Image (cartoon, rainbow, N blue to C red; front, side, top):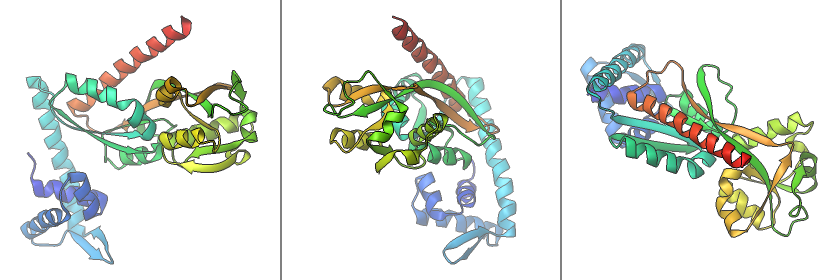
Amino acid sequence: MADRRLQVFHSVARLLSFTKAADSLHMTQPAVTFQVRQLEEYFNTRLFDRTHNRISLTEVGEKVFTYSEQILGLYREMDNDIRTLTGEIIGVLVIGASTTVAEYMLPRLLGEFQELFPDVKLRLKVSNSLGVVHMVENNDIDIGIVESPVGNKSLSVEACWQDNLVVIVPLDHPLADKGSVNVADLRNYPFVSREEGSGTRCVLSDYLKENDMTMNDLDLCMEFGSPEAIKNAVESGLGISVVSETTLVKELQLNTLKAIKIDPPLHRPFSLVHQRQKFRIRAMQEFLNFAHERCNMDNMDKEEKENA
């Protein structure tokens, strides 16, 4: 409903990139440039300085950006309030998730949410946990779901699902017959790790420090950017690793990997992350409520199985 030129300008000004703005708006770059030029013609002045393939806001551009934040925010609030009064839940909800969460948890969660709210358009962006936090900070997504601690105190972090991590080894590995593996035993074998910035890597690093070790104590032989690549490397005999139990359903059913408990136990929460001060559209609040309700049910089911 808001002036399209203002929306496009706001995205470019926020990201300081025509290319990134085009990606976030699902537009072509020439179309973004055209909208910005139209706004510049309307005000009869430049809104951006363009030098050496970089852009910055002019003094007038800074002023327009300040007003655009307020105007677009009021549009969102008006739209949300009216739809709340009419009982309509609609809009675009952009969710970011770390690789493990996106591949193994979110499909079912998003499917169930979409059944309840078919008029909400869901968009998903996938990165490692550090990347997801940056997207929340930059307002590129409404809600992030990550698997590592979040240091930014200005963000709201709500722990939800509890995740267990285990050691995985090939079926013919010397550790395969053990019921559990002591953390110190990890240093004795080639280790396949997630990349820097991943939630699993961050949690493992903190866990090692708590047990008087560091990542440097491990025989790091390879790094990969996804749980699937990690599992394939371990299956091929390239090393051992530590992964989420959530990622191992298929491998344990097919008996292609052995999962072993680690001593002391290694747990972590999957957390919902969003900006504290961000105005919440109704769809965002409904998703947060739905996610908390769902994770409470899942945690209760897990406790019942453990006590059975």
